[in-house]
Length: 321
Image (cartoon, rainbow, N blue to C red; front, side, top):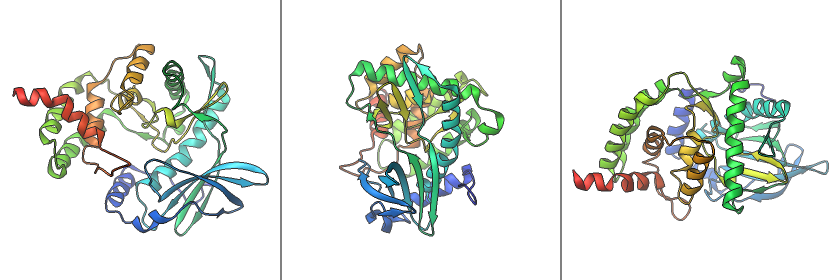
């Protein structure tokens, strides 16, 4: 299934990010999900709010059985290509770990959709997953969202401790050292290219440096890095964690801190912090905000809430200075 493919390195991910920002695969954005992927026939495409059409998500059928397939289009390997490769490798490991441990937390069975196979062509890469007939957590009551999200984060913490050294080698390991080495570069790039909020970015950078001493070296756990209600499917008492392309080993509580930055999810994050008896990390919140501060607005699908959050957080400090 993975013949000829390798786990993406940090250098490849960095080059992929550059290629994405250069829009080298833009001509593929008009592509929809392919009608046929090997022996799988298209049933319906799943519309994503981001409208990143060079990565199509759809439900297919093969021998009367449904499958979920993600397809990347392009000739130049960009960040979304390497992210899909990352999900292919880590998804296989995570499925086995969750399946063998038979995790039950707060009355829920925590699972990862099984990776079935991958299909390659000169201009595409498709990864086939088992189909999960669940509903997203998006429209669930807040109390259930808190309970389920808390269970997911506890499950990732548990599986982190079960991973062997060999299994860990397939995951990106974003260590304290990496954060500290990349922070000045990210800050400099944002100060140069960001159209607004330079003062807020600089103040966030200073606070990051001051907070860095509180980070414990060598401590890491699995983080989804884009955890939110749409990326969790609930099927009766089963919880499925989906869209795991950014999964990595990193500083504890990355997911809740990232969640606390996102519009409309701050109360949810606050209650999950309380449920798990964890504290917010100003370092993580500022680092993540700096990392994505120069992402351009793309109305009506995306408005950069990262830079807006920094502007709000440091507005009073700026005027007082």
